[in-house]
Length: 238
Image (cartoon, rainbow, N blue to C red; front, side, top):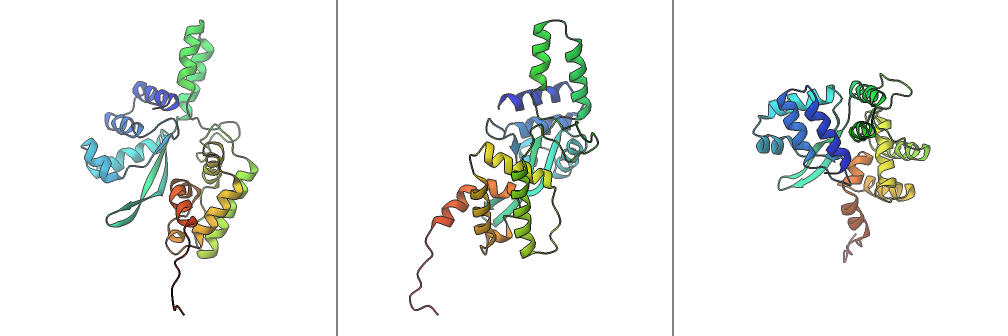
Protein backbone atom coordinates (compact mmCIF):
# COMPACT_ATOMS: atom_id res chain seq x y z
CA UNK A 1 0.00 0.00 0.00
CA UNK A 2 1.14 3.55 -0.62
CA UNK A 3 1.66 6.11 2.18
CA UNK A 4 -1.76 7.71 1.66
CA UNK A 5 -3.56 4.40 2.03
CA UNK A 6 -1.32 3.44 4.98
CA UNK A 7 -2.28 6.60 6.85
CA UNK A 8 -5.94 6.01 6.09
CA UNK A 9 -5.66 2.54 7.63
CA UNK A 10 -4.02 4.04 10.72
CA UNK A 11 -6.92 6.48 11.10
CA UNK A 12 -9.41 3.64 10.74
CA UNK A 13 -7.56 1.69 13.44
CA UNK A 14 -7.78 4.62 15.86
CA UNK A 15 -11.43 5.34 15.06
CA UNK A 16 -14.52 4.16 16.92
CA UNK A 17 -15.84 2.30 13.90
CA UNK A 18 -17.55 -1.05 14.62
CA UNK A 19 -15.40 -4.15 14.13
CA UNK A 20 -17.06 -5.24 10.87
CA UNK A 21 -16.59 -1.77 9.39
CA UNK A 22 -12.90 -1.88 10.30
CA UNK A 23 -12.52 -5.38 8.87
CA UNK A 24 -13.96 -4.29 5.52
CA UNK A 25 -11.78 -1.17 5.51
CA UNK A 26 -8.63 -3.23 6.04
CA UNK A 27 -9.75 -5.73 3.41
CA UNK A 28 -10.37 -3.07 0.75
CA UNK A 29 -7.03 -1.45 1.54
CA UNK A 30 -5.22 -4.64 0.47
CA UNK A 31 -6.24 -3.91 -3.14
CA UNK A 32 -4.76 -0.40 -3.14
CA UNK A 33 -1.27 0.62 -4.22
CA UNK A 34 0.91 3.59 -5.20
CA UNK A 35 -0.95 4.04 -8.47
CA UNK A 36 -4.54 3.69 -7.31
CA UNK A 37 -6.25 4.44 -3.99
CA UNK A 38 -9.37 2.67 -5.21
CA UNK A 39 -10.64 -0.92 -5.15
CA UNK A 40 -13.43 -2.76 -6.94
CA UNK A 41 -13.74 -6.36 -5.63
CA UNK A 42 -17.17 -7.88 -6.14
CA UNK A 43 -19.44 -8.32 -3.15
CA UNK A 44 -19.30 -12.08 -3.72
CA UNK A 45 -15.51 -12.02 -3.44
CA UNK A 46 -15.58 -9.76 -0.39
CA UNK A 47 -18.05 -12.09 1.30
CA UNK A 48 -16.01 -15.20 0.49
CA UNK A 49 -12.63 -13.79 1.54
CA UNK A 50 -13.80 -12.06 4.73
CA UNK A 51 -16.24 -14.73 5.90
CA UNK A 52 -19.05 -12.19 6.17
CA UNK A 53 -22.45 -12.74 4.58
CA UNK A 54 -23.33 -10.64 1.53
CA UNK A 55 -26.00 -8.79 3.49
CA UNK A 56 -23.44 -7.97 6.19
CA UNK A 57 -20.96 -6.77 3.55
CA UNK A 58 -23.59 -4.50 1.99
CA UNK A 59 -24.67 -3.17 5.39
CA UNK A 60 -21.21 -2.18 6.60
CA UNK A 61 -19.94 -0.84 3.29
CA UNK A 62 -23.00 1.39 3.16
CA UNK A 63 -22.20 2.39 6.73
CA UNK A 64 -18.62 3.37 5.78
CA UNK A 65 -20.01 5.41 2.89
CA UNK A 66 -22.58 7.13 5.10
CA UNK A 67 -19.83 7.98 7.63
CA UNK A 68 -17.63 9.38 4.82
CA UNK A 69 -14.83 6.82 5.20
CA UNK A 70 -15.47 5.55 1.66
CA UNK A 71 -16.72 6.97 -1.62
CA UNK A 72 -18.74 4.43 -3.58
CA UNK A 73 -19.06 4.78 -7.33
CA UNK A 74 -21.90 2.40 -8.11
CA UNK A 75 -21.48 -0.18 -10.86
CA UNK A 76 -18.59 1.63 -12.57
CA UNK A 77 -16.05 -1.17 -13.04
CA UNK A 78 -16.63 -3.70 -15.80
CA UNK A 79 -15.09 -7.16 -15.39
CA UNK A 80 -15.15 -9.93 -17.96
CA UNK A 81 -16.21 -13.29 -16.46
CA UNK A 82 -17.11 -16.72 -17.80
CA UNK A 83 -20.73 -15.65 -17.67
CA UNK A 84 -20.09 -12.43 -19.57
CA UNK A 85 -19.31 -8.87 -18.50
CA UNK A 86 -20.29 -7.89 -14.96
CA UNK A 87 -20.26 -4.42 -13.42
CA UNK A 88 -18.94 -3.85 -9.89
CA UNK A 89 -18.86 -1.00 -7.41
CA UNK A 90 -15.71 1.07 -7.06
CA UNK A 91 -14.52 2.20 -3.62
CA UNK A 92 -12.22 5.17 -2.92
CA UNK A 93 -10.72 5.98 0.49
CA UNK A 94 -11.88 9.16 2.21
CA UNK A 95 -11.60 10.86 5.60
CA UNK A 96 -14.64 12.29 7.42
CA UNK A 97 -14.59 16.04 7.95
CA UNK A 98 -14.84 15.64 11.73
CA UNK A 99 -11.63 13.58 11.71
CA UNK A 100 -9.90 16.23 9.59
CA UNK A 101 -10.93 18.90 12.11
CA UNK A 102 -9.63 16.79 14.99
CA UNK A 103 -6.28 16.36 13.24
CA UNK A 104 -6.08 20.10 12.60
CA UNK A 105 -6.74 20.75 16.29
CA UNK A 106 -4.06 18.25 17.30
CA UNK A 107 -1.56 19.87 14.93
CA UNK A 108 -2.20 23.29 16.47
CA UNK A 109 -1.57 21.90 19.93
CA UNK A 110 1.72 20.16 19.10
CA UNK A 111 4.78 21.48 20.92
CA UNK A 112 7.56 19.44 19.32
CA UNK A 113 8.63 18.77 15.73
CA UNK A 114 8.21 15.03 16.30
CA UNK A 115 4.58 15.50 17.39
CA UNK A 116 3.85 17.73 14.41
CA UNK A 117 5.41 15.20 12.01
CA UNK A 118 3.28 12.41 13.48
CA UNK A 119 0.07 14.38 13.00
CA UNK A 120 0.96 15.56 9.50
CA UNK A 121 1.69 11.98 8.46
CA UNK A 122 -1.83 11.07 9.53
CA UNK A 123 -3.22 14.08 7.66
CA UNK A 124 -1.59 13.00 4.38
CA UNK A 125 -4.80 11.41 3.17
CA UNK A 126 -7.73 12.18 0.94
CA UNK A 127 -9.86 14.84 2.61
CA UNK A 128 -13.16 16.54 1.83
CA UNK A 129 -12.92 20.06 0.41
CA UNK A 130 -14.29 22.32 3.15
CA UNK A 131 -13.37 25.65 1.56
CA UNK A 132 -16.67 26.32 -0.17
CA UNK A 133 -19.60 24.29 1.11
CA UNK A 134 -18.80 22.12 4.12
CA UNK A 135 -22.03 20.19 3.71
CA UNK A 136 -21.35 19.22 0.11
CA UNK A 137 -20.73 15.47 0.28
CA UNK A 138 -19.99 15.31 -3.43
CA UNK A 139 -16.74 17.29 -3.14
CA UNK A 140 -14.42 14.81 -1.45
CA UNK A 141 -11.04 15.25 -3.06
CA UNK A 142 -8.25 17.53 -1.92
CA UNK A 143 -6.97 18.03 -5.47
CA UNK A 144 -9.01 20.28 -7.75
CA UNK A 145 -9.86 19.36 -11.29
CA UNK A 146 -9.48 21.94 -14.05
CA UNK A 147 -12.08 23.54 -16.31
CA UNK A 148 -10.77 21.38 -19.16
CA UNK A 149 -11.31 18.26 -17.02
CA UNK A 150 -14.90 19.32 -16.41
CA UNK A 151 -15.50 20.12 -20.10
CA UNK A 152 -14.15 16.68 -21.04
CA UNK A 153 -16.50 15.07 -18.52
CA UNK A 154 -19.40 17.06 -20.00
CA UNK A 155 -18.33 15.94 -23.49
CA UNK A 156 -18.58 12.30 -22.35
CA UNK A 157 -21.99 12.88 -20.80
CA UNK A 158 -23.17 14.55 -24.02
CA UNK A 159 -22.14 11.50 -26.04
CA UNK A 160 -24.06 9.22 -23.67
CA UNK A 161 -27.17 11.41 -23.93
CA UNK A 162 -27.18 10.91 -27.71
CA UNK A 163 -27.53 7.17 -27.12
CA UNK A 164 -29.89 7.50 -24.17
CA UNK A 165 -31.58 10.91 -23.74
CA UNK A 166 -33.00 9.76 -20.41
CA UNK A 167 -29.63 8.84 -18.90
CA UNK A 168 -29.44 10.01 -15.28
CA UNK A 169 -27.17 13.00 -14.79
CA UNK A 170 -24.03 11.87 -12.97
CA UNK A 171 -21.97 13.53 -10.26
CA UNK A 172 -19.92 15.82 -12.52
CA UNK A 173 -17.43 16.52 -9.72
CA UNK A 174 -16.58 12.81 -9.56
CA UNK A 175 -16.45 12.56 -13.35
CA UNK A 176 -14.18 15.60 -13.70
CA UNK A 177 -11.88 14.23 -11.01
CA UNK A 178 -11.63 10.89 -12.82
CA UNK A 179 -10.65 12.79 -15.97
CA UNK A 180 -8.02 14.61 -13.91
CA UNK A 181 -6.62 11.29 -12.74
CA UNK A 182 -6.35 10.02 -16.31
CA UNK A 183 -4.37 13.13 -17.23
CA UNK A 184 -2.20 13.58 -14.12
CA UNK A 185 -1.59 9.95 -13.19
CA UNK A 186 -2.01 8.02 -16.44
CA UNK A 187 -0.44 10.57 -18.77
CA UNK A 188 -3.39 10.81 -21.17
CA UNK A 189 -4.37 14.00 -22.96
CA UNK A 190 -7.90 15.36 -23.01
CA UNK A 191 -8.06 14.81 -26.76
CA UNK A 192 -7.00 11.17 -26.34
CA UNK A 193 -9.70 10.72 -23.71
CA UNK A 194 -12.39 12.18 -25.96
CA UNK A 195 -11.16 10.23 -28.98
CA UNK A 196 -11.15 6.84 -27.23
CA UNK A 197 -14.49 7.46 -25.56
CA UNK A 198 -16.01 8.45 -28.91
CA UNK A 199 -14.79 5.18 -30.42
CA UNK A 200 -16.15 3.15 -27.47
CA UNK A 201 -19.42 5.07 -27.57
CA UNK A 202 -19.92 4.02 -31.22
CA UNK A 203 -19.02 0.37 -30.55
CA UNK A 204 -21.83 -2.20 -30.33
CA UNK A 205 -20.58 -3.74 -27.07
CA UNK A 206 -18.54 -1.00 -25.40
CA UNK A 207 -21.16 1.65 -26.12
CA UNK A 208 -23.43 -0.08 -23.60
CA UNK A 209 -20.72 -0.55 -20.98
CA UNK A 210 -18.36 2.43 -21.06
CA UNK A 211 -20.66 4.97 -19.46
CA UNK A 212 -18.31 7.10 -17.38
CA UNK A 213 -14.71 8.38 -17.23
CA UNK A 214 -14.08 5.80 -14.50
CA UNK A 215 -15.07 2.84 -16.67
CA UNK A 216 -13.13 4.33 -19.58
CA UNK A 217 -10.04 4.51 -17.38
CA UNK A 218 -10.40 0.91 -16.19
CA UNK A 219 -10.80 -0.50 -19.69
CA UNK A 220 -8.35 1.88 -21.41
CA UNK A 221 -5.82 -0.76 -22.50
CA UNK A 222 -8.47 -3.17 -23.80
CA UNK A 223 -10.21 -0.40 -25.71
CA UNK A 224 -6.95 0.87 -27.19
CA UNK A 225 -6.03 -2.61 -28.43
CA UNK A 226 -9.46 -3.22 -29.92
CA UNK A 227 -9.53 0.22 -31.51
CA UNK A 228 -6.21 -0.47 -33.22
CA UNK A 229 -7.31 -3.78 -34.73
CA UNK A 230 -8.21 -3.63 -38.43
CA UNK A 231 -11.79 -4.43 -39.29
CA UNK A 232 -12.22 -7.94 -40.76
CA UNK A 233 -12.61 -8.01 -44.53
CA UNK A 234 -15.73 -9.89 -45.59
CA UNK A 235 -15.41 -11.43 -49.03
CA UNK A 236 -18.57 -11.10 -51.06
CA UNK A 237 -20.26 -9.08 -48.36
CA UNK A 238 -23.32 -7.05 -49.20
